[in-house]
Length: 377
Ligand SMILES: *Cc1c(COP(=O)(O)O)cnc(C)c1O
Image (cartoon, rainbow, N blue to C red; front, side, top):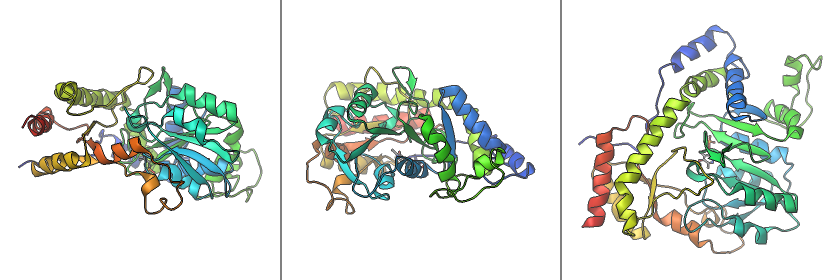
């Protein structure tokens, strides 16, 4: 039986050529030729104010927490249905995470939950565009403005996605992208910090360069460089950037293919949703679809386990997704005890289907057929 994996990295073919070029350039540390190319690509295509490649989205989030001067005892509002890095970055600075629930209809943070969670200690709201689907940014930004809070977008999954035609990643004060192997555009490990508020630009460079003003030195702005702030080594090798640039050149092609895959799933499972057997991804009017992933939501944990087992039995690599962070072994004792029913529902019932550039129509047909068989028997 031919197995269908959950994920398979797609290579455009140019990656090794560009890596060879980076080697021939004899500049393989950070901020070389390909890093500049990647920064320019993003700044031109999405009008991001300033982009800095990082070694991961996790790093970009950690940089955000430092840039926002998050201190011991500060509070940060964030969804519980997300990857640990979204909030761990802030916990590292001593923040307390105040978790907000998602909508019932889809796994993004529900802005109507946020206002009641704000206290005098609240410093920031972190939003996650789950599956690349935009959060309701107008609502979130207006709450942030009213209470003078920072907004960070965890845009790890949100490349080439839009809120009312505005690119995700350009709406928060700071935004973090991921190029991990499981995302749409990849470099193995990799990420990017987007700075949309000028006042963070200089300090971001310093934090990324171990707390030194080395970037300014290389631009000839200072005549020697030294230790001026806290920081770490957040910049990736130009080898990583070379790989990433080969992907970026193919972004339109990759996105078009992923949307095809997404639509095949949606159409193939639509009537099961109509009959109320499963819930399919919901796209609010203000959100575009970047086809990052495809999921179905089952009725219960038992049903999802049974479906997962049947798919596994057929060699289909379906997987569930996040476990509620407010119930995690690390955070449950720190959580304030509120129940987040929609978060728990998605943790129990959401199932992701195999999704990668090279998945064949035949494989998708088989996956759809197995799911239909499960619900029609
Ligand atoms: C993938 C992901 C991350 C982590 O990205 P890395 O580049 O692996 O650090 C963070 N947040 C979300 C929502 C993600 O999907």
